[in-house]
Image (cartoon, rainbow, N blue to C red; front, side, top):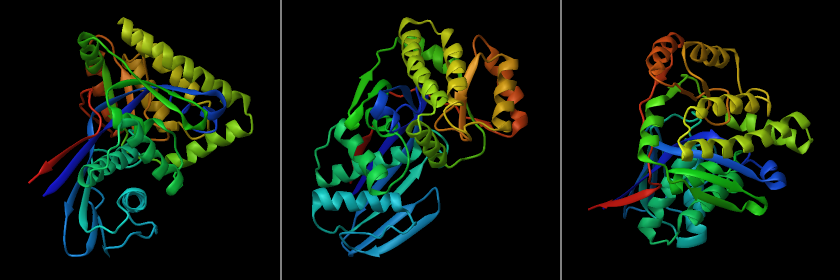
Length: 341
């Protein structure tokens, strides 16, 4: 028997960074994101040999242990081990024997929430296997706790909830880690036009988001007025983006994206660099009306709003930078599991 799962990656349309503590605790955060047809996959194969095998196929990494209730956190596939440790500690209460294989459609540091999506996918597979009844909120909260608390990984809260819920969501973040997910009902015509006009571009570089996130948090703690005001503007833009999409005022999307990109760069150093700036300016000169980095910044994926037929010119011009475009569809579902007998 195989227990398989998948959870979607996401693009952050507006408000990114306002889900990170301490800003979200002090002022409340608002983010608009959407899941896309790129996924994190997990497969659990129960075994009876008293072994635990963890295999990250995309990273070409594999570790093996004698079955134990706790696996060492030592820098080798810690994300997978941290999930197992929490599941055994809080739910199963005994060692398990299995092979866990994982794969993600985007590299680490891509800005699409790949790490959190992988955590959600693995947790969903364990829940299916061990009959652990977790709803979307509980699944996302557990994934958040494993990443941010158990493993002390810097980051916000949106990625886990996007992976668990799927679809277009306006998310609200409050103190005491309270999160409210508001699904958006968007007309199919608007969705089709957004898929036609949004270009997803991989710069070919990844980045360590934790450094940027730590700088953002430090700026809030030290009451950096410029950074705090930029965060306030990002929240406003999330609401503006929601209204533009729901009302079908799609030509406003590029403008809001551009404003969001300018605000985001004010929240911390390292969000942009000369290459990213050149890519962005080239896209705008070729016909895009706005865009931004997806995720914390510094590299990974960018996306651009290209009205009318300008997408083709933008694609042609950006090839000179050595990146690649990724075709995608917006998705409606969050984490899913199934069994192969």
